[in-house]
Length: 86
View (tube, rainbow, N blue to C red):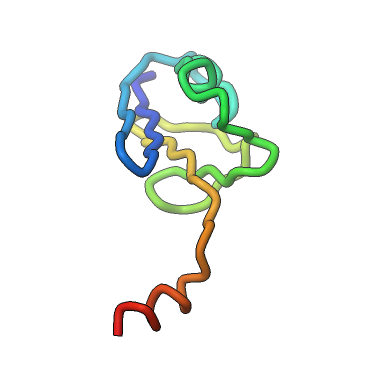
């Protein structure tokens, strides 16, 4: 089954497509992609993941064509940022 995996840092982004076995989970897909070796700072115990912008659990099964996303931790309070912009 063909799926995508993406991860973005502040200054660069990774987007890859790969084939995974049917009944693969989000965690298996991320592991098979090799992104954890490219970005050793990713910690799936603390970072959220999702599929097409919706938070998902690591044991969620992926579907053909899904885009698995690894989210960076929020480091700034969004309301504080809004106040700075005004």
